[in-house]
Amino acid sequence: MNKQQFTDYRLSDEITRALGIMKYESPTEVQQQVIPRALEREDLVVKAQTGSGKTAAFGIPVIELIDWAENKPQVLVLTPTRELAVQVREDMTNIGRFKRIKATAVYGKEPFSKQREELKQKTHIVVGTPGRVMDHIERETLSLDRIEYLIIDEADEMLNRGFLADVEKILQQLPKDRVTMVFSATFPQDIERLCQKHMNAPARVAIESTGMTASTIEHRLLPVHRNEKLAVLQDITVVENPDSCMIFCRTKENVDTVYAELDKAGYSAERLHGGLEQEDRFAVMNGFKMGNFRYLVATDVAARGIDVDNVELVINYDVPVEKESYVHRTGRTGRAGKQGTAITLMTRQEERLIGAIESYVQFEIPMIDAPTEAEVAANQDAFEQKLSGRRVVRNNKTARINQDIMKLHFSGGKKKKLRAVDFVGTIAKIPGVSADDIGIITINDQMTYVDILNGKGSIVLQAMETTPVKGKKLKVSKARK
Ligand code: AMP
Image (tube, rainbow, N blue to C red; front, side, top):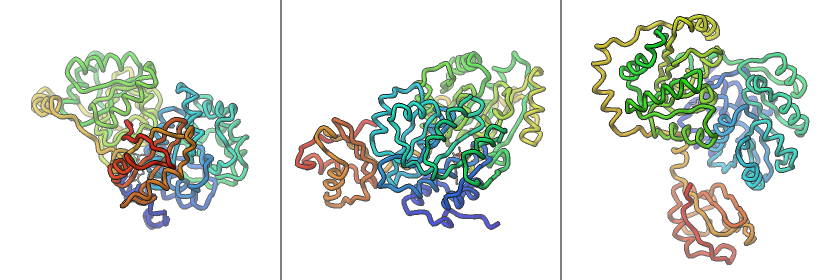
């Protein structure tokens, strides 16, 4: 088969432009299999891992097919975790940025009322965890009548977490005339049954087990004694001297110990585990994405579905107990065509876990020795220079997509009977500005947010200081976020 290009799919200019900025040059294997079929509105059962580019595989075609003018949600994506919901929302927003697609994420532990307000706005895509999506359906804050596309992401993880019953309840309430896509790394019986019951003669697609990450990651195994682990870990970081690195531990306690040690030694580091408040987890994750610190010490909560550009080095401080987890952890590096290194520290007690991992990934992980004193000494200066030097600012996809966008805040909304057309009508009349320069508009009771695209934010801001909207004088300012 000839290698396909994104241009083969005749995507709209808005989407092609977003893909260009995100530096998606050619489709990954799962995208080649899924995009043409999804554009034909076929039901699909897809065996693919995280890291294979699966989010864009469903994101690109559904965003292409969405009818922008429809106010009610047309796409529902179910994910097993809050982190993945947020990640999928971000990816979909980026792909749909210039088509002005609005995606909303709903998940537990965040106030229901905030999400209810968001769902009252025009929103094309809703991404959520099954429990919270069910809550919104039961309390009638999420309308399903216009849903045309349902995507179930990481179905195997839904099953592991006991969410399949909720997924099934949601499926029963959705319009029958819809496209359904199920993505999963494995297809145990319960998921097969769900697919057979709720899908319409789905096409089946299987992508190689470790996806596109395999050839871009150098895997290494390093035998250590338990009480040397911390010292060897530090030696590795000196020798590798990465710009960004994730260190995975099996337990919260180990995360805290490793983090405390690195912090004491002056590393630019943060930690992430399930014991932290959700808000702090997002803050740490975002800080890492933005390049505010170099080292992230985490449990497996951080390993699934989190997309950070340019992680150079993954260190498994503990060997993961579950073989799948090895793929997820190491899949944080070597993404999007870049090279990465994954080093696993292995104690005697952990040897037995490696066999299962090797047969799962279908290769033997080469062994290496701990760095020698001479190697550490030779790299110490460069390492310290980096420690004290400026922090990396990552070339983050979302930042690139948003760089020409300014969000404006207007001091009036629904209570003043203002509607989106009133803002579009007024702003598009400003000399040098057209309707194409206006992005997502969010109207709340007392205020309105308008995204101005294409670097036209300052012109609009200045003009709107003296221009009324629907005869009403509003205060306008640059929104804080
Ligand atoms: P996913 O499997 O959806 O988590 O995606 C894995 C990573 O690949 C993410 O960093 C995506 O942004 C990136 N990616 C997805 N599709 C492409 C593509 N066609 N070209 C380059 N990078 C991609």
